[in-house]
Length: 156
Image 1 (cartoon, rainbow, N blue to C red):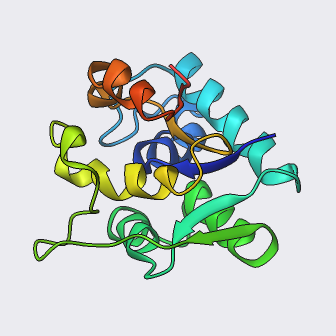
Image 2: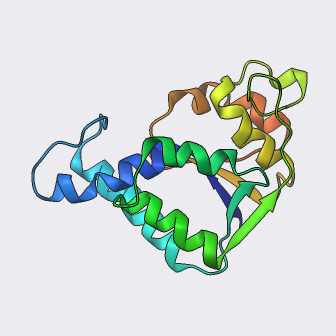
């Protein structure tokens, strides 16, 4: 089973499950209730499986991004905090002067905000997968990422 570096959009969509269940639209989420439930289910299953580790960088820049978008009341961040205590895998990630993860120059087309996720996955691409829900950039870069052995799990 792979370990996972989770894109922030997964946490945001999963956190919208409570609002979707009550019929209220989730702020900042542009998918329907069925899609929200699918992402919520994946994140719940990830939380409950001790063999699947959360991957974070040693500097906790990925974790900081989660905190910039979510609060402790959000399901997505609660899962991250649980995995942080129970099933964490830290990997070294270098950062440039702009705070973007350092990746090989051939991966330059990857969105700067996603490079930290890619850099983390590059540490062990056969065992670390990136998980995405709604960010179209991952699909656009799929072939390029595959050249480096990086797997992106597309939940939607």
